[in-house]
Image (tube, helix red, strand yellow):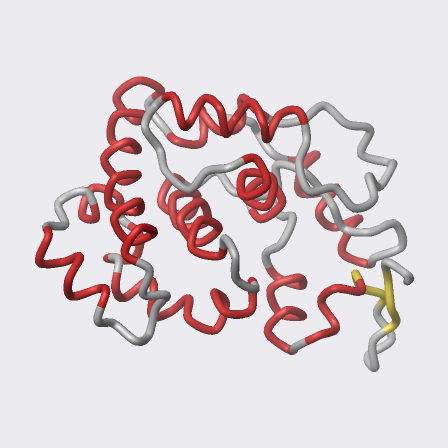
Length: 201
């Protein structure tokens, strides 16, 4: 199966995004573009955790509900959530009502606060794990890499939950730490340019 396709608008894109308009918009506007904002990084890592075992489309269509439920992923606010908040969220049909993932998000908010005290920013911590790759070569399909395994291991040591190596590789893709747009995809060059212009934290 080809890794790319030509859409009705004539643009060549990664084949996976042709499944739904939501995927096209996500692929066009976010996926693979570097992120250094701490709140957005926390959102991305939490949503990747919620996605575990589910389709990414499930998360995308509920993303606004997740943001409303989790204080727009302000980890300083989420860290204050109580058992009453957990019960409220378990009953919220607008999100994924998985108690373990909900409590993990609150736990991870507290771990994020600790990380801020140590590294001054989540971005500074996460970008340490950026894989060293030749940007001119598309890597092909990957589910993990050496760095996502290392990131997962370090986060677990710090007490984070739902941060397995595959989830962390998806996080790396989502936050633009790796550029996994397929060779020939029109957005691969844009992602490459944004990564070249990025001042690493």
